[in-house]
Image (cartoon, rainbow, N blue to C red; front, side, top):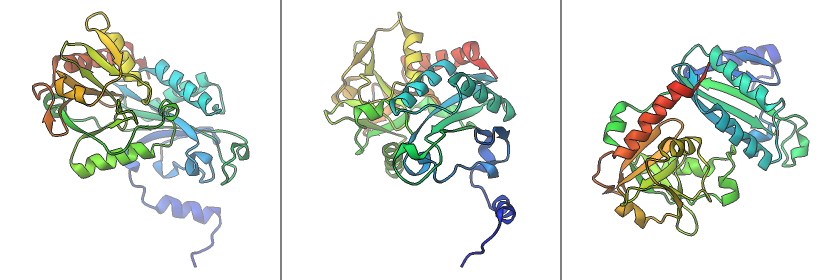
Length: 313
């Protein structure tokens, strides 16, 4: 039988226990305690928070580069929509959550990183009824950003059609903690030796990647965005559309897999990579098999936009 210990002995054992990934944690805030901590060994969430055992919560991940936190407004607007969709609100006002997010980034002591904001149903029991939980939980974690090497942007990446179907439309539009289908997509990509998975809905229309939006440049040079029926409305995607509006025709349309064969370019858009060219899909070259001018332009403009318009931390 394991030892039965008091809180002091338990905490001592906890502090002596290895913490995989702890070297990447810069700082975090836990609303129940109301403080920011820089010791990853103390990054804990109560197991009876419905966030943990029911996936009952929402999150956003923001990037900061060169001391500039990007897309603060769009990320928190989407988080507020996601939370409202599951009848959840943070334990403090949303503007306070945003201010705390900046505080955590600053406390991490790095001018570049990622910060994840998580709102959960809160602790209170192991049932399924949200009424068990009297107070929602809020955790904010700043952690190191390990970007893809420049070579990946110069050469492009591969993608394939995953066997995992897109989420139901009402769930796909909520950025909830329940990312099991996304996890399975990522696992399948690793097993196949591919860089990125691409999923389709039950009607055969292109939906999204595991954590990114997927777009095409068609044979006419138009920027094709798959209709966001079974995909999350990406903050990077929508900003990219704004940055190219007026120069390239943007079309939101239902996209079948056959469209990839005639596309000039295929790309992913997301917080971590900004914009990255897919040069091979299901083993076949996309366009001329090299990163195209539109994806390169979008990447350059987002990088410049971060520097010009990111919020100073």
